[in-house]
Image 1 (cartoon, rainbow over the protein chains, first blue to last red):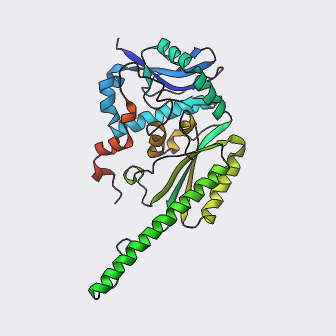
Image 2: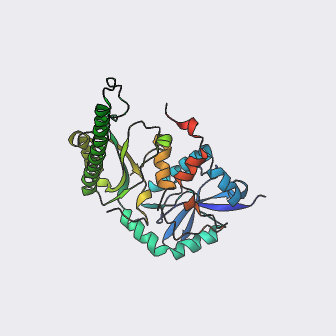
Image 3: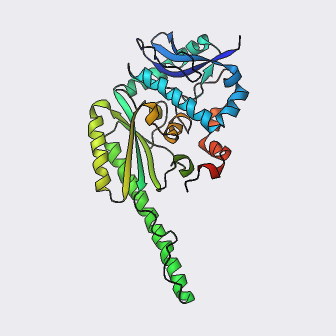
Length: 252
Length: 58
């Protein structure tokens, strides 16, 4: 028999329903209870999820992608029956007892987090520059005198600087508008184009915790904001489990 | 509220949430199987492992 570890997906309150989806290793998911908390967990083989194997596997983008999706699927399934505190990817314990010990040790924090996200979902708001970089290598008329060339170069730099400032201001106004309808807001780092495959320049990558009752209003507002804040294409994703709002500090 | 179906989620959005800075319990939970600090496995490290030519949009 191979050795296993216990992978934790998320924590919720009883009576949470056991997610009827398979976990990251194709294993069935079960609930481990301790007092007023339950953790959705699954047993995974150390051959694939032990320290050494894990280090190697996490560097493999397709391995990572499938595990991230499966993890997300379990968290989402658990979230159907009530508020959840999702665990980051690849949090594992020796056995169920250690999971219970973790639940006991973090009970207060987790209960606070569950209360904070109760009745809310996370929405992602991404903003992209809608004009495709005016200054990028335009085939202008052939350069005249050296002075004209230098002048043009200076103008280009100044235009770029203006664009940068105006983009930052637009991103800020989108963030503020979204935040005003949300319970909490958080900025993620801008996404790398190589991973996102997005050709437009990303201006904002934020997440907001929104009351479920207000989700329609929030979505409608974000849609109309695309028209109000000129030059920003807004992309809304969600609803997500509250990944960005459990134990994490909020951005100002 | 039921959440976004897994197949409609982009990997990069998922990575923001599941691996990137400050997300979820990290400070309190220790990996008991080993001292793997997964916070170190950042998007940056991942990108470093990816051949830039493969994912580059044309």
